[in-house]
Each structure stands twice: as structure tokens, then as C-alpha cells.
Length: 154
Length: 426
Image (cartoon, rainbow over all chains, first blue to last red; front, side):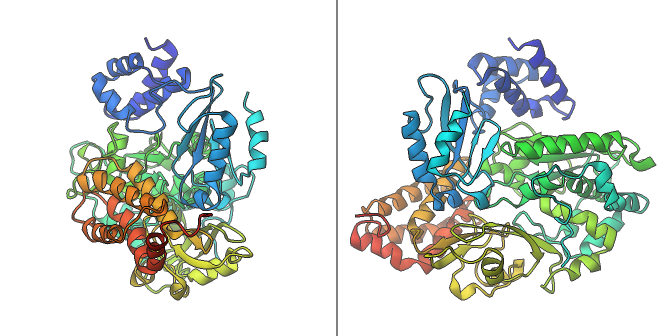
């Protein structure tokens, strides 16, 4: 069941488009903002709210990289692995991060604190290498800076 | 030197509020334009010879001229600011979006007025959180001051402007993929024709323009197409350009410079040349999907026609520099992995071809390549081209590969001969 708050937020989005379907990516993000991820049940609920089949909702949910169809940690680390960051040392950075957290890219730490996801160019190429944790962009990273940075996300 | 787009952007500070923006001449162009015929805006933009800054380089005025007049159906026309900016190596629109959101809103309002659109969407990539916050704030200010909504500036013109933040996928930047994304579908490409200008969002005429392109419009309207054209160093293309440099240079960054600034000036004077101990080998002039240029091209003017003559594309105008301590095969592999991952899977050459090429390049990097692999790479560059695929994604992926095979052939051959990547420790 969508909460009243979620329903209201989705209703707001509907006003921006001539057809309810267009609000589907916003609806998915609204649910994700409240619950961290999008479950099968939420896919059905969003479908019901927008007059779409669960398959139609899921076809969108699985297409976009920032819709999570599995639970993620409290904090999501998006580490850029595109060309400028790659030149500037994104690979060793990612390896270091994976080793520090004790997980493979794509996985979540056992304590549910971090999920590590490699991602496409973050548009901070002049300040490479870069990553995002939740909504925050961090740039000009070094191995030394990483440890300090992670401490800020409990 | 005139830097109309960025002169009021203050580093590390909040962007200009609506009031501050108006104090430096903001929304004057809108006030001027809305008192005159919509066609006047398009005419000035045509005179300015403004070519689209998203990478396509289509003449903006011409695009707007192709939008049909109102058909009396009562159904709206649309305009979209493309702020997807997911081309690897590209960070220029972020500067404008975060730095001066009102400039984009005014440019989009002017574009909307020119084609008589009733709804405008700002399509922003998911990751640009700061830009989203600042745009929402600026939109709220503009609505409060009746610069958006009904009866804009006391006229009969009505425009709703909506921020649409996506959910992350390179395909959304492709024009027809973007239309599907806004409509709430997978961002697969659509067949062309019909083109978006006649049949876009919900089957209605839709103009799609890049963020930087739209940011030029208030200045063109206010100071005239001829003035804008004179900012450029190239005869047939007007304006300044936001150029960028990333890679192992002394000062990576972004600069607003006259269109037609040479690659050498950008690289050496602005970016400070390569870092100590590194030697220049090549550059991608405008993002991941452009062909390499090398030392012999450094004096090429970075405008659309000159870069095309040199065998590449200006693209987004943000260059990625390849140095001598970076393996060109590894770099192309990185790009191919990106394109393979971002392929929407709609057509076979892209869905099957790109992962195959990524695996072949990986084999070369891992010391398992054969000379037949180089033939296979060559063959794909010839085969995966426009006309054989649904959209430009896969042909775009061939640009760096094909040009790397041309300019860095010996490096590919060494991977085969030595059975290892020469840049990796043995």
C-alpha cells in the first residue's frame, strides 16, 4: 500500500503531464525516497495508481539505473568509472573502496551501511576522480581522502 | 573579451536571485520579445548562426522554423531543455545549471515564445542535485513574479515550465529517447521521420534544445544576432562556447571562449598543458563519441565545420586528453564498456555488437588478443554506422575506436605481439 504521503506526492506529479503514465519515473523515485528501494508490491501499487500494468511499471523501473529494485544500504556510493575519472585513477580508487568495505561492486555491506555502485560519468570530469554518496558530490579524490569521507556517513 | 553566458556566475556562491538577475539585465530580453512577434526571436537566432551546443550542431533558428504554426486543435506544442549531460567527459551544462538557473529559464521562455509552446520541460539528469534545487527555487521565483504561468508580463502568452529529473540513463540524452523518457517509457529511440519538431511529446510538435544553446538566447535577443555572431572567430558559426578540458593536464576546467578557439590555445594556454612528466598523445574534442584528434590537429579551430574537416566532431566541446602514460587500448575499452552498458538494447548491432567489441578489447588488454581481433575491430567500425542502427549511440561508440585504430595502430599491434598491455607492469 502506498502511504498517504506517497499518494499525495504522486498526485502532485500528475498535474505536470497530460497522461498519468508520464509520472511513473517520478512515482518510482517518490517510493524509493520513502522506502529506500522499490519492491514488487510497490510496483503493483504504482501501477494501480497510474492505471498501468505491473509489467509496464517494471519495464521502466528496470530500465533506469537509479531505480533500485533490491534493497540498498543506508548510504549509496556511486563511483564514476567513465573515461576522465578512469584516466585519473578511478580503478585503484574503486578497488580500495571495495577492499575497505569488504564488498564487491554492486553489493551492500553486512551492517547495511553502504552499497557500492559503479556508475556512468557524473559530469565532474575537471575534478576527477569523483563519486557521489547519497545526494552529495565528492571530487578530486585520493585514497587518503576516502577514509575520512566514509566516516561522515554513519 | 565578452563572456555573456558566464560573466555573472560566482564560484562557490549561490546563483543570482531573480532580483539580482534583473539588476544585471536579466529578463529584459523576455520583456522585449513578448511585445513583438514570435517570429522576431527566431529571426535573430537565425542571424546569430547559433548551432546546437549539445553535440549535433543543428542551426537552432532553423529547428524552430520547422515547428509548424498552431493547428487550431487546442493541443499544446512543447519545448524541452535537454540537461541530460551524460556524455562522458562532459561537465559544461552543470556550470550553467548550477551557476545561473534564471538564464536558462529565460532562454527557455524565449524559445517557447518563438515556437508558441504552452508547456516547457527542463529535462535534468538525476545526479545534478544542486542544479535541481537551484532550478526549483528559480522556477518558484519566476512563477511568483508572473514570468511564468498565465498572462506572462501582462501579455496573453501562457507557459508552464516543469522540472523533470530523470533516473539515470545515457539514452535519455538522445532526442527521441528523451521523448520516451518524459512520457514515462523506456528511453528507447523512435524512428525518424517524423522528427520531434513535428511529432514529439504525445505526438505534438516539440523543440528540443541543449541547455547551453538556450542560455545563449537571452543575449541574442537583447543584443542582436549580428553582435552574437561577431563573438565567434569562425565565419559561419556565431557565439562563444563553453569549452572544457579533463585528463592529466595542469589545470583541468571550463572556460567560455570565442567559438573557433584552437585546440592548442585551449589545451596549452587555458588548461596549462600536460602535467610534468606527461606527453600529449591525442584528444577527444567533444566527449566519448567523437573521433580522436592528434598532434597534427592542434591548430584546428574548435568549431563545428573545422573539427568536422579534421575528421572528428566538435560534439559538446569538452575535450578529454590522452597522455603517454595512459594506454589508448585501455581508454577505448573503458569507452566501449560504457557504451555497451548504456545501450538500450533496442537494435541488434548495438545490443550485440558493443559487448562483443568490449570483450575483444578486454582480451587485447589481458594479453590474449590475436591479429584477427584487429581485423574484427576494423570490420565493426565499417559495419556499425549510421543507417545500420536505430540511433547514433553505436555509431558514436565507433568514433573513438575507429580513430584509435588509425592513430594508435602500433599500440594495438604491440598488445598482440607482446601478448600483454605495454602499460601494465609485467
